Amino acid sequence: MFSPDLLKGRKILVTGGGTGLGRAMTEKFLTLGAEVHICGRRKIVCDETAKELMAAHGGKVVAHGVDIRDAQAVDHMIETIWETGPLTDLINNAAGNFISRSQDLTPRGFDAVANIVMHGTFYVTQAVGRRWIAQKLRGNVVSITTTWVRNGSPYVVPSAMSKSAIHAMTMSLAVEWGRYGIRLNTIAPGEIPTEGMSKRIKPGDEAGARTKAMNPMGRVGTMEELQNVATFLISGGCDWITGETIAMDGAQGLAMGGNFYQLRDWSDDDWTKARDSIKAQNDKDRAKRG
Ligand code: NAP
Image (tube, rainbow, N blue to C red; front, top):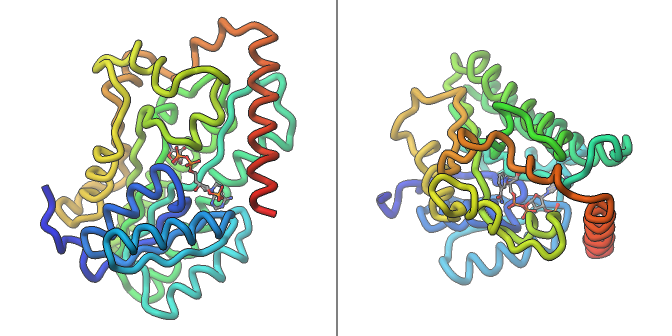
């Protein structure tokens, strides 16, 4: 579908590029000739991904251990990347999310999602955009959101609010920065099973099972589909698309609205089990980060 050198000469930052969808997009950009930088809080995970992808495909993947909630650390990472030449593209993919009844959320739980998704995404976008503007460089920003930006979603309200903020940022900056040749778009995927996502759903639920049962096309999304849309958006094939959100969900958002409405049938016991399992997973992740 794409010529093998399509992204030669590009230098792309994929936040959260060490795992899941971010890793898949990193791999695609690498195979099309780009130099790719990835970041995550767990540097060791990014290091392993960089090593594995370079061993499989050659090229250059650079890992950064950075928490995007820390604006100063973000600026330092971008400055370091810029020392060897400017980025050409930014993929805002890093996020956190967990299901909870909204009445059970603590301020800390709300901030855990909002600080990554809303604040962190802005810090990275601004640190990159500021430099593009100062140096009169064009650039692309693609953010990974969800279809809930259009209609909200129960049981993931901090994520729905924060992804909507990215949607608003995308529309706003497409207008404000269009004059500099900076484009911003978002991709709103439906379910594409990843380890990160399935860790935070109901214990015992098979990844993708609920989507398969309800999706108009009867299936979940694939990494390849996401890789192709992301590549197209930064390819230069249609630079007049900006400020857009492209849903990639087999029309599930149109058919069902949010993904989690069915959870209204859960019992108190189901919610307790889900909360305990999410907490155990968070403790494990925290221990890995040291
Ligand atoms: P994932 O594997 O958990 O990816 C999240 C990535 O973000 C991880 O690599 C994580 O690395 C990084 N991250 C989280 N907090 C961070 C922080 N504060 N600073 C830097 N990096 C951070 O999940 P995924 O399923 O691939 O999701 C990727 C994106 O797709 C997210 O934006 C998600 O909302 C979106 N999405 C996914 C689906 C799906 O079905 N999978 C559907 C719709 C939208 P560390 O933990 O090491 O920091």
